Length: 117
Image (cartoon, rainbow, N blue to C red; front, top):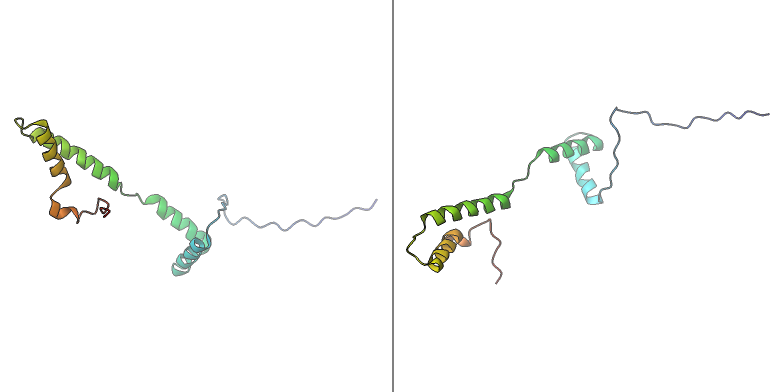
């Protein structure tokens, strides 16, 4: 009987102790990662790691939540200061006018979408 010596397959040596992760990216995003990597003089994998760390540490500003909360607080204060002798319709229209703000400044507000004409 003839013994056959099998040559071991080439196995890539582990470069670190962390588990590898694979992902798919659009070509445009990969080009941006490559540009960031060359600008910061790091490898592509290091660039992806650093960009992920940066993305996970940055907190998005909850603009809508803050605006909604501010409007609720303003409505409560307006209700407390409202004229009790005025009718309910008058109080509602005054409150609405105060919450919307002066007409002159409505176009300048950045927290509201532009009015469609």
